[in-house]
Amino acid sequence: MSILSEFKDFAMRGNVMDLAVGVIIGGAFGKIVDSLVGDIIMPVISVITGGGLDFHNSFVVLGSIPDGIPRTLDALKKAGVPLFAYGSFVTVLLNFIILAFVIFQLVKIMNKFRLSADQAPAAPPPTPEDIVLLREIRDSLKK
Image (cartoon, rainbow, N blue to C red; front, side, top):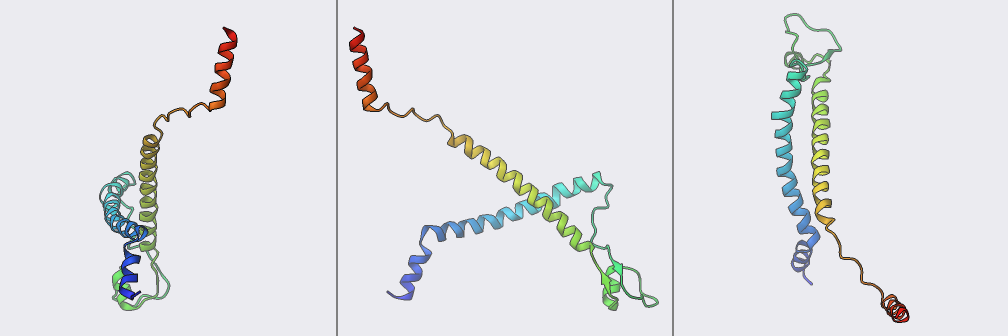
């Protein structure tokens, strides 16, 4: 068996195709959720908290600042001043927590819909033949 035919067999298996579709849909879904967080949820949270939820420019200076350099993150980084720039990490962490919560809620809702669709009333199992015969005997004895 040639390598090309082995690769074709591998690629055409159901699991690999399902995984490929999942990755593609997951990437698109990630963009939707990023937009939901960035464009809808974060602005609402920013309004609720008074607008100061962006921590990107939060930092602590660990060394001395040379004269004439403004006290901004970009200027201090360009000057080579040692900084503990925690702001970007805090913002990314908050975005991750919100994103994880939104995905959790969406999965929870989807599972609820799937379970309700799967719980269609099942037909009762057929009565075993020996029980049917015993009932017939009982009914004939009653007569």
